[in-house]
Image 1 (cartoon, rainbow, N blue to C red):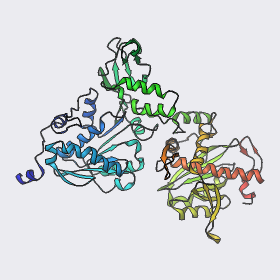
Image 2 (cartoon, rainbow, N blue to C red; image 1 turned 120 degrees about the horizontal axis):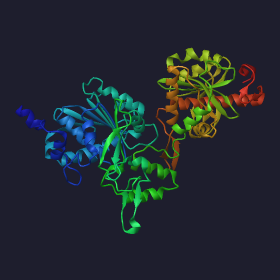
Image 3 (cartoon, rainbow, N blue to C red; image 1 turned 135 degrees about the vertical axis):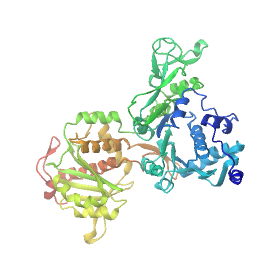
Image 4 (cartoon, one colour; image 1 turned 120 degrees about the vertical axis):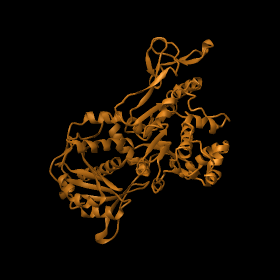
Length: 546
């Protein structure tokens, strides 16, 4: 044992986590880390050592990177766990190691004595166990490494499918802990989606004057008092009696205590040291500016707000579903458009006309790609398909087979290019039609039909549990048709729909809308009349010379 201790240092198994932090975690200002320096942290600290699944939706600069880094040190060093700390990209993971992990080690003689294997940026050995820091921009970071605990930082920016895949890393562990924290971004996406699936705990402040309880971030800005013109201060006040609120005279209350996943929302307002004057001035300057108001709500209140970057929200879908009054359909007498998004599974959307430009989603399916060819003939016949558009990538060979198997419907493989174009690919009997569309413009056209009032895109009602699951998936994928600001090679900024997110049904609906436009275009040229959005006649595809 003496030789082992000489090589890796002697750990401190007798210390609790708060004691460990006070002795060995030194903050940037050279003070010891007191995990209980804020009243609301006590229950959270207890939860991350008790509950297997913890989610924290937080405001910016609320101290959770420090907390979870210290937690990671303790788990690997004292509890003998192997831990993976995930960030959105490898670059962010490397920077985290250099600017957060390494400085904390350098400020502690004890941690320096315990650290081995420092030659790899993303792998640190503490004693006999390992602390990994990995990016999740691709599936590579999610595979191969077993762990006892996985921590996800900046969840709002992590690809959800890769994050789900990373959960396999803890399947063989008796511990199997998962921790997620981030400032929120889009509604019901990323950390907001995880928080809504939890027991949704909120910090409820009790007024010492009238006893009324309130959730500060939900009553902002009505609970702010600005008395600076009277040489006073800005403070949080009870909206009933007006008395100043003590943000630490409060407790965590779960909105859904029956759920088995623990979740907290931590706004900046519940931190006693928060500069309310800066927060209030920032709020005033953001008035009339949707993008700035959205950033304020996310970073200060810890509440997801996409501004104008999420065209299809829960509120939009509520209006859409209220406007529709029909059920999932197994067949159609109207000529329909079919769209298919290809991936590990194929997502299929079938649309019928609604009005002059809109559509009704009649049916939707998600199946294994290898089963797709078996289903296409049935769908073509049952839904009276006039046109079908399918992703060219990532399985171009399979997509071409789908197009070739069509009996009457017009079929295209689809590429996203800046300029609209219809062309062909291949020769003789291998030739297939190709459609090129601008990705952002086409998605704008699709999402606008949902967001129009009244909506011009409608959703079916489910008839059974399976169709309800499909409808839930469609809702989720539509809400993930979100935008982000990107910078091109020339340095110019552009707003584009985000890639590599779980929006498969949204993309399938977009392709189906384009297919329906093909049908309408042919009908305008030579087809039967359209009345009230309904095509008269069974299958005009057979009558049209494509």
